[in-house]
Length: 106
Image (tube, rainbow, N blue to C red; front, top):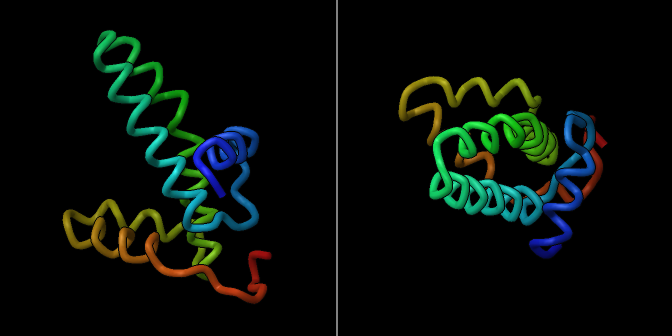
């Protein structure tokens, strides 16, 4: 999956928390979010806040689908709220390879 396909897929599935998201899909979309947020912050704080709000739900949704891809519930994202350790654990999960066969999430 390339950059544009990943962004289109994630925005098309704006608030879809079911299914699976591959590693490239997740990381390309996260790069898109980062680049768009950086560009918006150059324009102004209100634009940056608007972009952040608009991309919050699809970011959470694609992260949940990414966790589904490694057979974990999307609720495991809440681990990232634990300072430092939680963020490292979720980062470790996000970089794990996809399960080649089907799992309980699809």
